[in-house]
Length: 248
Image 1 (tube, one colour):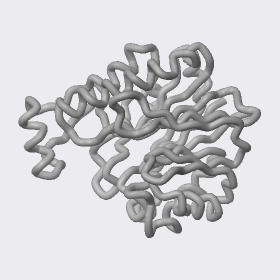
Image 2 (tube, helix red, strand yellow):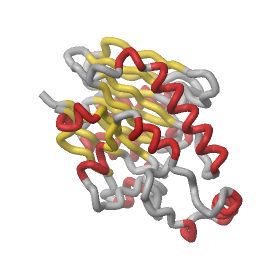
Image 3 (spheres, helix red, strand yellow):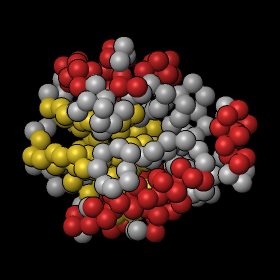
């Protein structure tokens, strides 16, 4: 048995873009979708209808939401201390893998990177009891991985100024913390030489969206892809490209 999971930041609650978002989701044929910026339950309910994914969850002004073809055994939102957004815990009936979805604080500076690192540390501490079993952590980390290129010249002027104030680069503490905790960046493991940019869809030059699994379970990841075509549809739907992962 395999599970197709999509992680997708739908931007500003997805308002006014239900049709294009639904087209992107349907094209990926997922069994479950983790949504970031899913702040409007009316939009998520509409996406549920349009994508024929009947089980859904969303709360007003909570970033994380979900769609699922499979019945949901358990779901809950958790907000660790000092975290801006709640993270989502999801268990599906008949599926061994426990799923955690997150959306870390945005902005590019050494100060916000420290906040993201605190957020991810709080999440990992909060799920410690599940870390010996098969689980997956996915979402918009708003962070760069160690060693990956930062194309400052392609960024807006105000972001370039923040990066200059931060020492002309962005700390990679958040993703390094995940790696140090024994997690594997699924996309990078399967695509060691590719860029995998997920943001922004009209001029991709940053990889901000990730799927992580514990090292001992990496062989269960059969597919991990950034969905970037058809480009016009992806661009119209959101500023982030979705990530599709197939889990054995």
